[in-house]
Image (tube, rainbow, N blue to C red; front, side, top):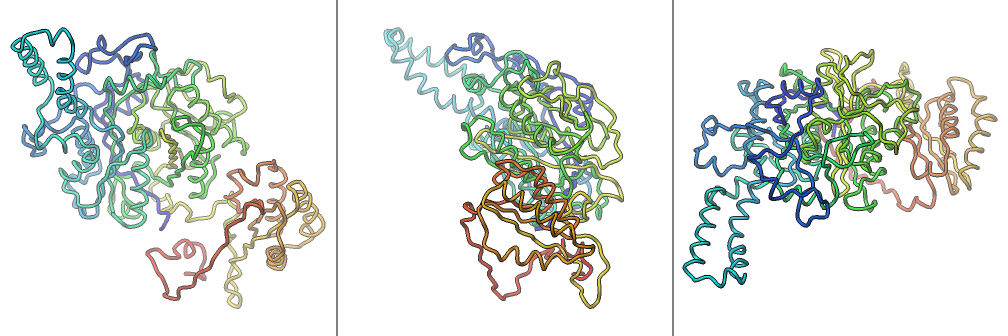
Length: 628
């Protein structure tokens, strides 16, 4: 599978106080807060709210980020009005956001291959109306309980029937009836299916549930599918409108919700605020977007994923899992964390969650010497609340528009930082006012999204620069990645001399002995080599020798390169370097190991069938003339 960048060519979004991307971006730039009390047309707070956090089956929170005044015209989509009544608001808003994305991309009019267009939408809790239609069915259970009460059973049969009849009439007035259109109108998977159906798309469609990371799980699938050639275009995003009383009550019983505001990264952080939103973007492979003269907002370089494993608990944030997702993202690109300038954090405004994420980010940048305030940090949740399954997609839209407009967007409600993590010696700053994004470097930004169940996603994006953007994430060697080969003139007699990187392995009984051995060899032998000097005569025996308890393999292309990496290992040495090496090690071709953990054997299979696949050896051909 290749590592071609993915172009974002169209955007559609419906969010609190925003019926389209322009209104959304205006709200983001100006730092507008769209959090309010529960609207009266949603549910009656007098029934479900109690400030007492111990009250049984009650919510102590009655605030959220609500989408108001949404209207859907079924005739525009050739849907009979009676059938439209059975389609959930969730599905309707997803269709509307998809329409906006298609119009924004120009593919509402331009021809495209519908058989090669996929739909992947993140949604975790389904449609709110399902709870009500379920309640309609459970009315018989409610009636049965009522019949068992002493007061009701003491009534005459006629009085009982009259009360039950009135009860059912009230249900009919407030809850849509159930027919053959009800189930497809509220199923979570049909959220994506409805888009495929209405826009006549014949590629795969599916809905992804990874809790609050659902929409980035959908993005991961779309990116992988585009790169593998399974489809040529993807309608991708997240959808969430679950703002029902049961959702509030259940989150309150975890202690997850705030009763007074979304205080992301602030010492006031006391829980997240629920929000709803639909965010959709159209994706294509970069080279296809250029070929088709598409408008390109920004580029996706990589999506990194991980799970927390056993962790602290099924709902507790785990720094090691988050760190692994970030590491897996940077493994796919040819630049380092110090090259990004903006992070759109998961940032939910829970004290433990914010502290965990800040700790991971602080450690990420601690390996680099960076100017103060060079990395801006924010979270859209400070403005519209936590949109749950749609959160990653909403964060993506915010970040995409920031890259496109060259504006660093603010994060609101930040006054006094979370005291758990001290950022004074870090390049990270929580940005509180919009700023022009001034830089001589490529504008790059990353997005995080983490979900219940211990699932983590991290996305690397960069700005689109007409005529300058590279098509592949590792198409050209970065000066900072010394694992990449240097450019040398090929000798006709030795055509593979350009492939001069060699793996040199060192080992010793202990970690400290390993450092001392490497430094000694550097001073006594390696530093005496001239340049150029072949590495192979030193590397081959080092790999053939029996390995001791602790070791490291280093990919080197020259004496100077090997010496610098030996110095880096000595400088970075700590007890856990063999199990938890710095991110820069892998990027530089440095692989520490403990012999006790090398339990697996490597098998080499030579089937002889001459297996081939699309883009085979593309990455080598991009670097080596001999391969071309």
